[in-house]
Amino acid sequence: MAFTLPDLPFAKDALGDFMSAETLDYHHGKHHKAYVDKTNGMLAEKGLEGASLSEVIRAAKERGDKGLFNNSAQIWNHSFYWQCLAPAQGQKPTGKLAELIDQGFGSTTNLIGKLKEEAVGHFSNGWAWLILDQGALKITSLHDADTPLVHEGMKPLLTLDVWEHAYYIDYRNARPDFAEKVLSNIVNWDFVAQNLDGNGESRANQG
Ligand code: FE
Image: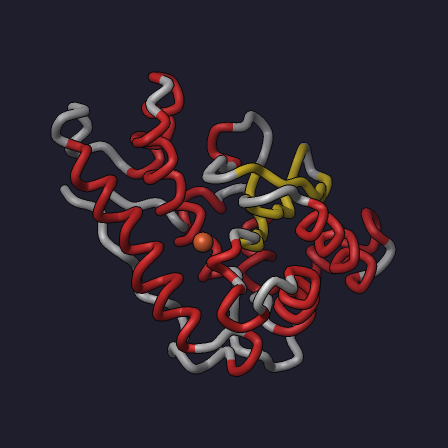
């Protein structure tokens, strides 16, 4: 079965100036869609029809099939990313997530500062990640289409796309401004907290 482009979990204009409808038209409607279309176009020749998205990603990694890996991993990464965002309503981490953040980073402000540092310091295309590693929160980043799914012990909690296509329309070349605005205002902390169950992978999987 072919993979599909998941709907955005919010209206296209719901993120206001933090992430415009125009950015979402391109980023979701064109970039994310292209990864879906390209992956679907390869499944039959690779003998992977009927495999789930995560199975395709892992098979491509094992085979060293860069084209299939890059496109399929980007379907998953983007499907996860959209769920990490929500309209600005003053949302903050609560409960167990807030406790883990305080333990690991001292405060949510510090966590956001560290994530921003990782996002800004990441050279060229990639993704900044907050992950759960053996019960503790960790910040890291991965290059290009690379994804926590193929890294032992990396349970995905939150991600920020730092490819230029993620911010150029709204922020031009100002990645620090993009990271600051998004992380401080439109993170869906309830989704991040849900992923503490270690099942974040399943929330962007399909097939
Ligand atoms: Fe992207």
